[in-house]
Picture 1 (cartoon, rainbow, N blue to C red):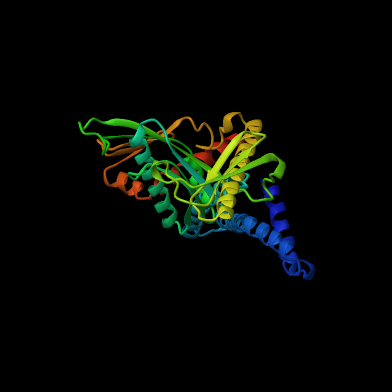
Picture 2: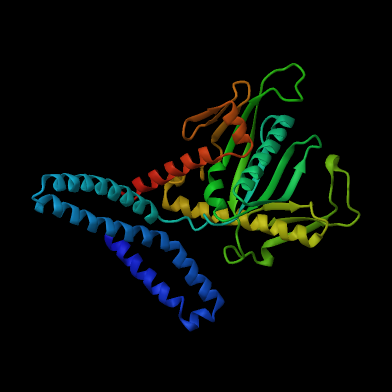
Length: 358
């Protein structure tokens, strides 16, 4: 590990020199590439330099315990050694985490797709609750949320809603939300007061750029049609809605919420590109590890990941076997999700450390 860290430190020094190289300064793309690589390894280098400084302090303190003829001075030196050894272990663990391979998608924006599952109208209302929860979470992180496509039920629910979350590190946080979410409550549409169980599925896809996924024109079939409102009635005289079929996979994406046919096409292509990118990532990860065991929540989307039990005021995440109650449940529904996401990220990190033998 120390050899690897020394190599990263050397590379950091090289990048610092490149940042002042006239050839790099005059080339925007090269300057951005060098700057990005430098910023990515800077936390590792700073932590490593702190680790080396502590090792030197430890060596000096141990020398004092052995060389000092003053009992009081030796006792103080031993106390300092204990403190520095503890700090050294903590920084070593931090370095191990920093050396874990980064998911190249972690810093990307995300496209979130929420679909009503079993439960009819109640499932659609639950999908709307999840949409509200995630948009509020995005707002709390200083990110922006932009709706790309929606199929509403007319009474506040969504059969499907797709939206883009823009913000640094959005995928690194929201990727743990992929899966089946289950709700248990008395629906507003239930006259007899019976508790229903409904579900909604959440898919979190890293936004793909043109350089990530290129889609040849020959691979897509584009159809335009009139936008439809609730109940299916046409709400546009012109054909502005767009449906794109990806011929190699049979995947279909449609957008109708914008007034411009071009805007709907751009949004539909953005969703298609993200789905294809996610498909390619899944294939790659499957080849590396069976069912992507090292990433909590990024695989097995068919598994139930969370239950929202309203009669008991209990919200449970089944992956970490953790529940919150009452006001904490409501706070999470209002977008305060960090308590669960932090723990999921920590478990993910621990499993990946174990996988690489650290």
